[in-house]
Each structure stands twice: as C-alpha cells, then as structure tokens.
Image 1: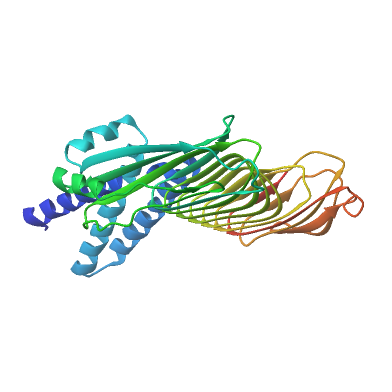
Image 2: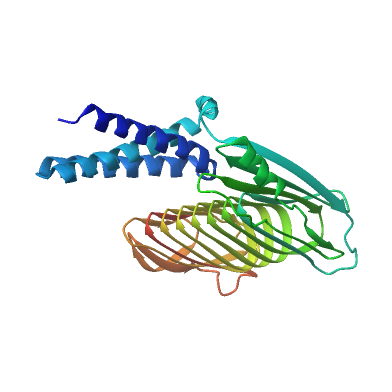
Length: 354
C-alpha cells in the first residue's frame, strides 16, 4: 500500500514533467500526423508497462513501471494541451520571460552572381523568403526563459544580436551564452531578400524549424537536428535537406537533391526539371507528387522494409514489382527531354509516388 508521501511525490513528478513539457519542448515543430504518431507510441509503451506490471513480482519494478507511466502520461498531456488555448494558464507557474527584437536592412551588390546566406541557430527557427524590394531586411528575435525575472533579464542582456553583412553576404550565428539548468534562450530569424537573385543557402538549427520560400539557389544546405524543414518553391542546382527529428515537406526543383530524416515523414512536390532525388527516412512515410507531363521521363527505385510501396505514374514499366519494393522507368525515359530519377527508402513507413 503506497504511503501518502509516495503518492504526493508521484503527483509532484507528474506536475513537474507536465509543466516542463509545455515550456521547454517545441511541440509546434511537430505536424499533426507526427503528434498522432507520438500519442500512439506513448499508448504502446503504456500497454507494455501494464503487461510488465501484471507479470512483475518485485515492488521495486512495480514502482519503476508506475513512474515511467506517470512521466509518459504527463508528456502526452503536455502535447495535447499545447495544441489548444488552454496552455496559457500554465504561465502563472511557468518560467519568467524576457524578449528583445532587432531589425537590420540594407542593399546588396547588384552585380554579384550569387549571394551567400548563412544562418546558424542553437534554439530557434529560421525563415528565408523573397520580396519585391531590392534590399534585404533581417529581423532577429531573442527570447530568454528562466525561473526568475532577474535571470531571464540577465540572459537577454547578455545576448548580442549582430549579423555579419557585406555587399554579397549575410550571416548570423546565434549567441552562445551560459544558461542555467532550468533556463533557455531562443533566437528566431526572419530574412527577406530580393526576388530574382541567386543564393547560396546554408541554414542550420539545433532545436527549431527551417523555412524557405520562393528561393532560387545555386546550393541549398538545410540542416536541423530537432525540427521540421519546409520549402515553398525552392529551386536549386544542389539541395541537401536533412533533419534528425522532424518532417520535410514543400515544393522542390533540383538538379541534384538529398533529402533525409531519421524520425519524420517526407512529403514533397517535385518540379518539372531534370534532376536526381535521393530520399530516405527511418521512421516515416514518403509521399511524392510529380508532374503529369508526357515530356518527362521517370526512373524510380523505391523500397520499404515493412510497409507498402506504390507508384502510380502513366506508362511506367516495372522491372521489379512487389509490395515493398518497386523498380522501373517510364517507357519514354531514354528519349525524354526532361529526366527525373528518384531513389526512395524507408524502414518504418509507406512510399507513394503519384
């Protein structure tokens, strides 16, 4: 029989994990389907805990299973609450906050063949998009969170938000400052650059999303560790989109592209240009929409370890065709003026190319 002290301790652990899940996990980086996957996975783990509890004859193991179940339940509750307006009340017991925003603008060299953009973030999201103006504008927002207002203010005052700007280059590296164990510092970037120019993009974020909109790039290197990647009409000669935990989606046209994620789905619309695409994920599905154009030829190799593969393209001739592995090409591939080669692999998820 659990004592009242043990029950109180478990309750406090539940509340603590719930508040930390709301305040320190960027649930907004997850798409609705990823949120669903997390809830299902949590349910599976809880069922395993239930079976182990039935089998267990050890008091220590019983308490450990109960603690794991409490932590999972609190994290899932934080995920669900974060998606609704009900999360705002948690701020009364949550961390203190401090914020500052700086904006910089200017002109770029009109004669430069390519413009270099480098953004390196620790915690925060980056958005790069074009606009009609000839100059650029970069807006940097830093947010500090801590369990005291003085600590939050100390963090925000220690931050230097100064991009490096030249006639043909814009770069920013998020500040590295010392934070306490219960404090955090986030830096978000929004960069507006002239439409019609060619860019070399190098964007990275440890914890945060990367977004690119209407960019024509010679090279595009987007690397996120924990966060999704979204490209809205990205055209590139070489494109590398990589994240460890997060989905990748949008519209992409590339001569050569590598798209990889460990935990997340890939959902892309491909453009009508000759290109080679290599796509891979470990836990997630792959969905590709390709142009329905008789002047385009396709060569496809797609394989899933445990789920189905489906290719629905007119005049596609299968060299190898089974439920989890498809290879082949359209009958016009050798003579088509535009050729698209696709290699797609996933371990735990389906593949659909249509």
